[in-house]
Length: 168
Image (cartoon, rainbow, N blue to C red):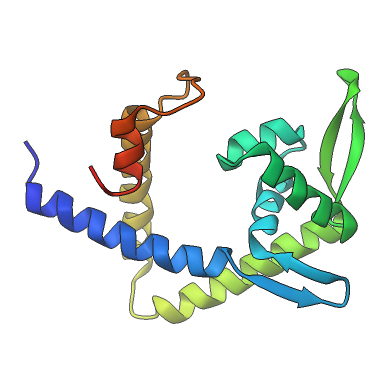
């Protein structure tokens, strides 16, 4: 059995990280084109890897489809994403990142890299690689217990919901 204090410490650290992440993601900024939520840009990273339907994007973001639809509308309005007919099913629409969207993704990556360079200036490349390796291993293990990929239900069991909220 794992050291229970260390498990509690892990959740404390993860909670601190989630608060930082939420502050960064759940903000609104103003442009000449209007107000936009930074959360709308999360989908760009997924669309930079591959085009997909709105429903698939919502699943990959683990987000409500109506929220993703609103975010996609903002991204389309900004010219960062366009809608195209799905070649496999002409009735369906694919979300495709534009060149301007790819430029925005690269600009956001540069901001993140600069911030992490500053925050982790005393870390070695080996320490960073170890963090990535161990965090990936942790997330893979947690996903297998909390939300197995084949589990498709409308509502998560209470224990899983409490676990994610840090209340378990």
